[in-house]
Structure formats: C-alpha cells, structure tokens
Image (tube, rainbow, N blue to C red; front, side, top):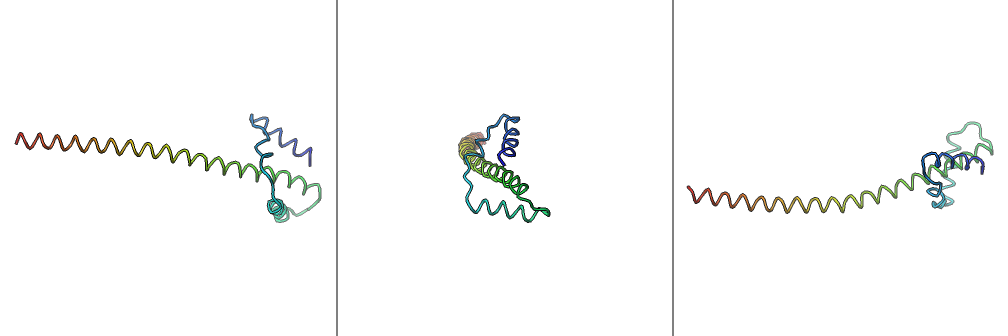
Amino acid sequence: MKRFSNGLAYLFDTEGLTSSIIEDQVMSEKDIEEIIAAYYVSSIDRTETEGAKFLAAGHIVKSLLRAYGQLKQQYFKANNETLYLEIDTCQQEAKEARLELKKQEWVINQKN
C-alpha cells in the first residue's frame, strides 16, 4: 500500500502539487467503510492486495473531493463579497443616473 501511495504521490509532483493536500485530511471510520463498500460494489475479484490499493486510491479521491469542496466554499464566499461590492456600486450609479434624469426633466419642463 505504501508503494502504491508513493506512486500516486508522484502524480501530485508532476502537477506541481504536494501530497499534503491529502495528508491534511483525516479519514474517519465511516470514510474507510465507504471506500471499502465502493470496492466491494465495483470489484468482482476481491483480493487483499487489490483492496489495499483501492483503499489508498479511495483515500486520495475522497481527500481531493473534500479539498475541492473547501476551495469551492471559499471561492463562493469571496465571490459573494465581491459581488456585493459590485451591486453596491451599480446601485450608486443608478441613483446618480436617476438624479441626473430628474435634473434633465426639470430643465426640459422649464424650457417648455
């Protein structure tokens, strides 16, 4: 399992990432059970060696999914803050435009 994990960690290196992305994720007993259940559902020829490989790969996939979820939450949180500022700016511009429109209407009424 260690050799298999090291091989997968090499893939992180090729993309300029560190395997700390997955090392920071703590696997609970439930997580391990879910990975093993996925192995039993997807595998016809179940062996201890293949199960260990699947567990290592499942750990990486689950950890990446969690990291993706956290990143997604952070992105949308930051994006919502930016979106609020953009909306506020647009509202201010609309208010100024309405004032300018009222001034122009007043000028037109005076000329009439």
